[in-house]
Image (cartoon, rainbow, N blue to C red; front, side):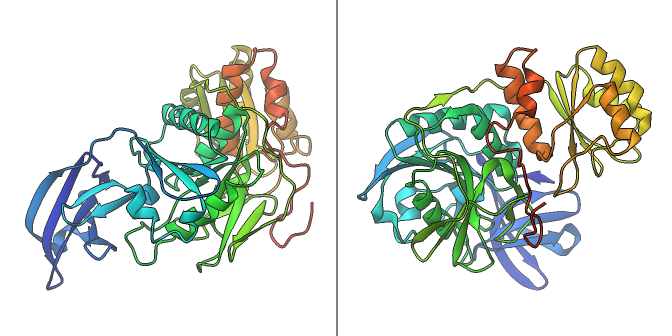
Length: 415
């Protein structure tokens, strides 16, 4: 499906099932249109069922960074808009999808708006799926600047790849003088059922604590009552549309915000006295998700010219025996292979079955219970910032809480 981008907006007037509608085209393909209606809701319409009456191409907003201080008293927090559902809304007078206006967006919607001195920075908006390592670096530098003169930073981000960005920021910040909180919304701020406002409210409170980690703050449940604080390197988006899509994997959330108060539930790293940003990232890495029909040709293509390959193996950390000779040959050429598990919970243990032991002998290094996507981002950081003889040790070392000694899966039984 091709999406309408911020710098080109299409406004449609059309009839569908006997009724007339107006809205902004979000995406279209050969079968369907996805339109945001003037009431704020999205409608997916089959092409053969729509009668377009009028179609206007409109210019979107300039994509430049803007900064301003918003009114309020109390601790100073930097609020960064990087794009995504939470940082944009539809201007129904023009049909343009544009970054939020900070004063309009926050005042009257965020109950604790006046409790903080907020500095708003709007970066060029990027859809979550369009985020790249260059965008992570841009966000990191903006966060670094924000931490120099504020208590903490809140980053508004698209939800689909927010966990990747959180992991990237966590590894790039060797030291941080305040909390770095990423938040988003499953429903845009112009919808009556938006989760954006409480997510930001909780994020601002978390950003004013003595936390020294990169975390994600999103809804705990379906109702507007509680916001979870989740460690960035242990978090996954587990549902495509629910408010409580984000879950901590292998352990409980760090804290929760409810009724104006914060309750910490787990120990955490406290803020440092200074900031240290190492924003070099290696792009020659790959994540290979094993499946039964994966061929050696496809495997070699995905591993070609890479410095590191993260394998998302089955169960305890397995890929088919047919790949053992390929991995052994590629390992001898200098490519590093690391094993994670496709399972949501649990750790790799490659000494249980013969396949695992053969993979180890071929050069594969197990990474315990590190999440596959976190391992990918970590390899980008490690291979860009450490000498070749240090990378294996650093990949196995618990740098930011990405590896857990014990997991608490499902009903809470410690393993």
